Length: 393
Image 1 (cartoon, rainbow, N blue to C red):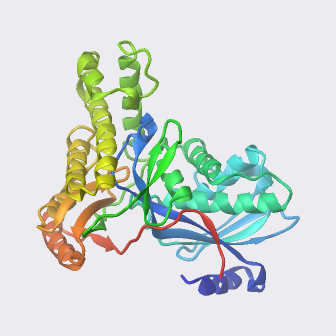
Image 2: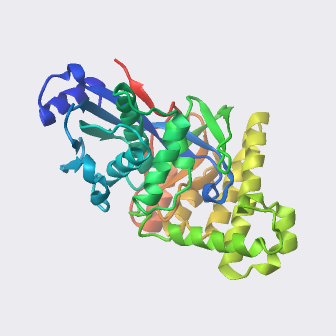
Image 3: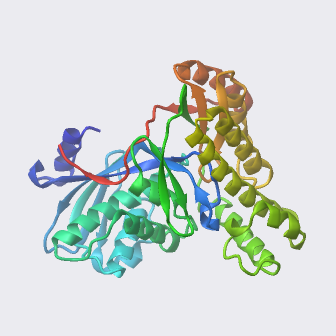
């Protein structure tokens, strides 16, 4: 929705004039490579997208209420600032409530306001709709807090606060990657992010004669109801066992492929598989960054294929739909790499496709995918853009 249209809709919902309405935005993200290693202290390689959450906001001085509405949902929610802990488990609005609760606990001046959310990040797609909502909310509350004489924060701290809200308020044991990319994304760049230290580097996303194509398998999913938290627990078990042989490690990302091969005997079964994926994926991220900077896009594409195989065979987070979607993409003669992106259990693939052949690619993949699973995928027109910001007309 255009900014003028969003302000008009805001006035329809809440009344008043558009003069004092402000707009704050945060991005969805695609992770190019480095899946299920952010919560293991690894380095990941996400990029912020043009698919975004925009929140139109107006202060309500003296009020204890945060009013929530959305352009695409009928839900209307009112949060009492003094009882923010009471809204856990809302059908819609719990991400906003969690951010407000965490920020108030951290000392920000959270005041009354009216908010209207417009989100183009597809829900349940694996493109971090939750993180875009959290970070847009945090960016807005931070601005309002500073203007009220309260605490402010930089974009890194806003990402950390947003992750804390999802971990502690929404009970999803996600790592920092999604919120970090939603907050600190940079146009035409990917972020090489060390999730252990939060050190990061912007890498120009020059793909030569190839373009990113994102496709949604359209299988419904929920991180809370899926086995996401189970995978994290398995990684924590693997770490504990490996520390009996490697006492200096603090996370699985500290384990080199060589050390893993020497000490894997302490692991067995699925726990061993999970750890093997994490160690291998960390190595693929480092190699992918090197290949991208060197302009070797074809070899980078093969890293994507290897990542998907590992997520399928070792981490077991793909499923019939994502395997069919990635397999169809990899069979297209103009695609040099495709993998699931996000937490899995449904969601999206990211593919490297010859520029100018996106429509041909979409038809080829749709035909094969529909024969395999019985329904069509959805393709998104995306670009790599900036992260969180206030929008000005």
